[in-house]
Length: 380
Image (cartoon, rainbow, N blue to C red; front, side, top):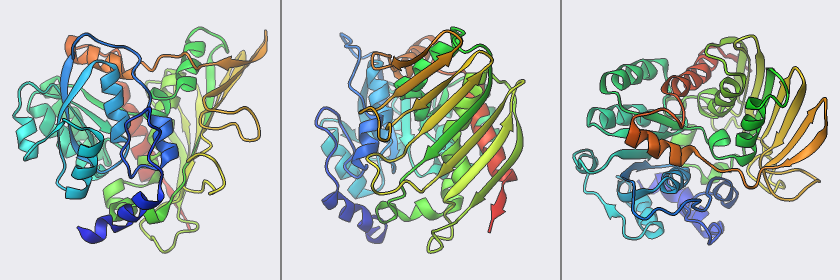
């Protein structure tokens, strides 16, 4: 265990703690934490649900917890088998009970939801356990890393009628992307016929635990990062099916980590539409954020461009959205857009509805990414 977390401990010494206005896992790079963690938007008189965390191996767990809290959830307990992760988590979430075992949380009938950012290959098996114990489940992406896992998750979800949600944060936690969805729904650019999604990330290899470089544990770059782009493509085009036209992956510049794929892309068709998606681990160190994430949505009457994290050599801040149609070209302020995923998920838990995300969409977005991964040509 010492070797696994030595890099993380060194990173703790060198990385600033995230902004004081938010709660953050200390090993999460500051720029990632700032993008994913937001203040509560609604104050509830009392908690609406009780929830717990099992598996906190990725810093995205903070964003997951924040989202549920925005919906009125109360984090009551957590379990992590790694002592250093448990200690850091307890420091950031004082008063939250450290359970003696995973089973203690599963057997607690007062807990309605379990959130997890476990090592990716463990998320689907955990979600199956959670659902079979009568609880709903929310995973960090990738929530499922193989078609075999997906088949079993779909089966158990149908049998138990529990929620299996995957937090596709590049849409669900991005105000500009949510605003773009509202504009598309309102007909601002006509019928969407194409999307281009770019998901560059900073690798920071020395800060990553060993599992991050083991493909059998993270699933591959398209299985992992591309789930964001596949979710956005299906959502914005309202596609209920897909076809992978072509996909490819490669390790261009990290031969010291042979299990890593540092580049991947895919071309896809949906319901009378198409899309291109590219993801990579090549964000330069000089950029002031973890990645210059972009999305272009082409419609029959205009287009929308989103610069989610940064507008290089342009406007300050995040969530930049430009709308161009037959009537106008304008910058759209999305700062007041409500992040609705967490509150809607809590509503769904209480009402047994699908307002945050339909179960079929959740699974289809993952299936698209998994299929692209399986069909990918390997660049050598």
